[in-house]
Image (cartoon, rainbow, N blue to C red; front, side, top):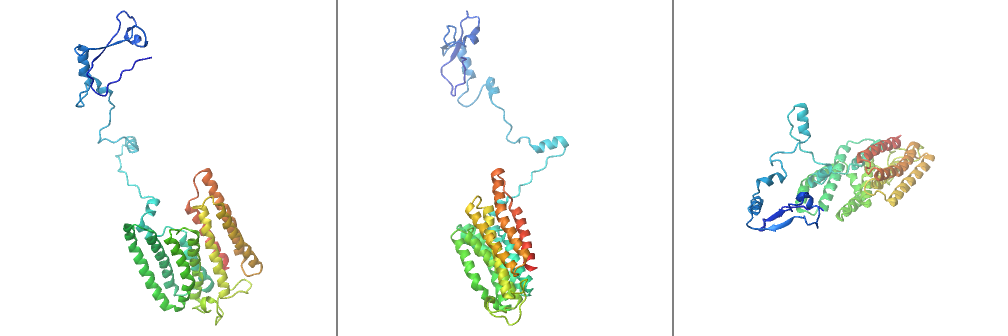
Length: 394
């Protein structure tokens, strides 16, 4: 067993001298390999010996100075002002071009999303934009376009932005973050209130739509207050309110004819009819509005099963069952001539989509740990929205 020597952590007052037996031909090195042999080195402590004096000269002093003979043992380090070579240095050596200053990295989507002021200005729920646009277009296709829509649509979009700002303010507990949200909250609230007043002066009969819309927004705000703004109830209430915009724009097209919420008897024949002519006016429009609400309400659990509620088999089963029920009703209505066959077939496709897409997503997560991007799911839903509009209006 070899003998190792290590430098003491503190200067020693005892001087160590190694000596080996002169008669040993192997020398001190080989003699040290035998722990119990007579030729093993002897430790002699002598404060006055010359070897001890040389050992004192080689030992580090209490002030931290080191001897020249031991300076080679210390690792060399680059000066503090010198950086390590990187890819830019390799490019400079290969091409002769000077190094380029590194550009600051742009903030990630997660960093942008967590900025409370920006979230209050621009909602991060990208799926809501189709929900804000498609139902009014459905009302135009069935009933026709009215110039009051130029006032109503900015009011409707402003009301959603106002709801979003208020929801962010309610769920924020920090006074500093609430101060960042106050400006968009005041801007959107003032914008919506002013446009709503002008729209009601142009079309006073629109006040009747407060009756179905107010409870839906109250449920959504209550969920936000409880911190459940992403809950299923909150999503269903907001999508139902957005789907009612199809009936509201139809009401603008017929100038409020048809009584309270279209449940009365119209004074004149109203636009819109089913393929067999059995449903006309408001009866046909309410069927189209119900199908619009069924589509958007179905996307709420469907998207949750793709992102936030992966591997939730109960939610997946409920989503597929709801789509299948609407598909069965649509096929029955199409067989009686009260719904286009293309729209009924679309509901069959939506039912298959509600099952296949989540299972595919779950498989990707298990195998590659890389799920589908939200943009990919958004493209699929844009195609479905266009198909819904085309098939219901034929």
